Image (cartoon, rainbow, N blue to C red; front, side, top):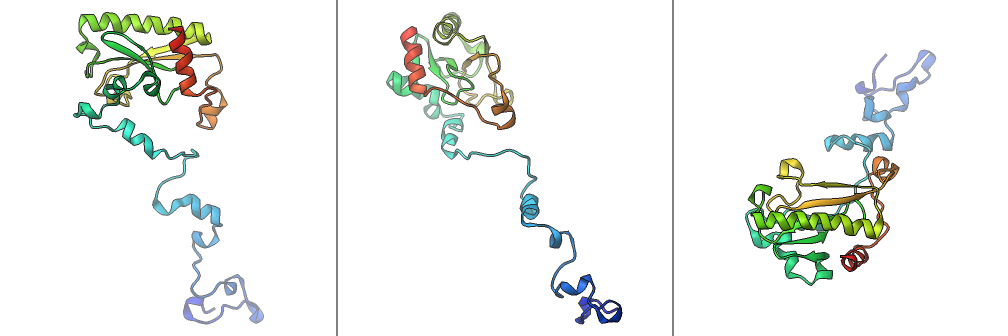
Length: 210
């Protein structure tokens, strides 16, 4: 039998064309030839392995999370107090710290307690800053309970980029209300959070209760 690479038709017994005859001499018999369009797309031609996640591209967020770590003027936590409360989503202001809604909340009412001073570490707080920092955290729990009656809270600080801090150079403490079942199939399966209230509305309700 003469193969297609030899430039002649491949024929089976009695001159009938075998399976190879239907493929032109330029066609490859490798895996790519038999793969359908979806299989070919899934391979991504070396760009990366598909992982099952849908992705929503939000390039506008880069300015929020990647402001220069060594430039205080680029820090959103230094800029927010210069804005009007509703514009900056500020819920309450103390003498040395302020309370602000997270722009990308895990749950409705996700607050952050932030010192005005541009410091990176919890141990950098002065005694006066620490006292008010703790008092505002305690008040935040009380206010959120009165407004939305959560079943529990996550309270914590991501200290440093390696610990997951999105804005590591400026210390901030998260106060996240939790409800039974809030980690349901949407974030687990669909990688999506469902937030039932717009941020300005949440801010207004919390500020009024403060």
